[in-house]
Length: 188
Image 1 (cartoon, rainbow, N blue to C red):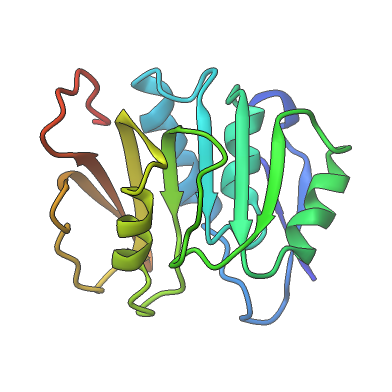
Image 2: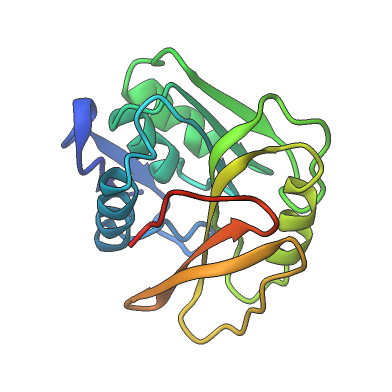
């Protein structure tokens, strides 16, 4: 196992486990730091209901909790690694794990303010996951953040528009908003 850490907030510096093989590709510390700088600047994280879909290690969702998100849901098909990382920060209140296929979402546990999606690169799972989120998972003003491979093509599906796109090494972070809904927050 290799190590990564929580970058900011109340659990800053806490080490998290990450597999040494390529079975899980955690969002880099650089990309997480930039992502949360944008979200924090827009005032979106504090007290939010945050979804980390295709969570892998749980690093993004745990970062959100550390920075003040009230509720965090970590969803992936494999949850063994994320459970160990939650144990490492002593099972904090407000963090929930669900073992599920992110491209076939069922009923939502709550309405989310922010949804972070990090499907395996070039898997084609982003569009089915976004379609699932549109089935009662998002608040009207929700921000959806999607991590893809830097050169992976993506056109927002009906119901979403691209607000911003940033590249961090091999990753591209896309900020999406729901169309047909008034938004007063801009991630930039």
